[in-house]
Length: 366
Image (cartoon, rainbow, N blue to C red; front, side):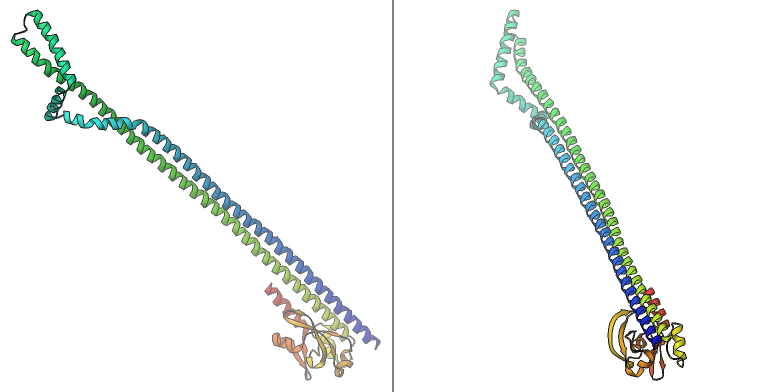
């Protein structure tokens, strides 16, 4: 009886130690998982912040380029307006006299302009002065009443009108030429102004586009890094969590097997099949829920609920009176049917096979 009590105590101690190891493995895995998630979050936050800064900087650079182009266009406009103001009087004068020049270029227009000159008071005074001077000169020569004197008097009127018209025509032609030159200069300035503004706008648009596209590319790169960091953190967290669950399962499984070995080593010699199964850590029998009282869930391993229970009186002589930890054979059979068998009328669990299948399933899930 003393050997059986010692075996029960040893089994209980091994079960408790396995439970402690299981809890420690879960806690360590949780800490590692949390650390992985926090590191991933920090990396993702940093990458997304960098992406925002790059996008903001690229937009700011594009705005500066736009402001610079506005200033350049304003300066071009100022120079254009200044030059236009300088040339406008010449263009206007040339345009105003162009009609007179065109009129004088025809015979009818020329005659009309001579008549207009002849009708002015200034012309009459000039003609009178010229004729008086000519009469004085002819008088000294004694020719005042001759045909030559009459012809000279007639010529004075005609020559003076034509001279006045010639001078007026030349002056207006010069004004027209100056106006045309100013107009041509203004046209060249207009073309230059339009070209300069077009170049500024084109260059600015291209520069802004390049800046924004480059910034967008860099931002996308940082965002991709942030997403990668976050995804890697989640994967690492899942890995550590899986490692903790596997460690917990290994600890619990090892404790259960060790407990079973201790119990089975002290069972009756006539139950050789049970002792052999326990000594090889392959089977723990009497897992049928019909043999158990006061079952309480204490955890979960591999999707199965882990219980503590008291054995019913009918089997206490064989398995003892201490609290035992394990699974329900009926629940194990539903998920791992090849790990459950029968001894007599009751279900038993092959814990060695069950332990292997739980580890393999958890490894695939991780």
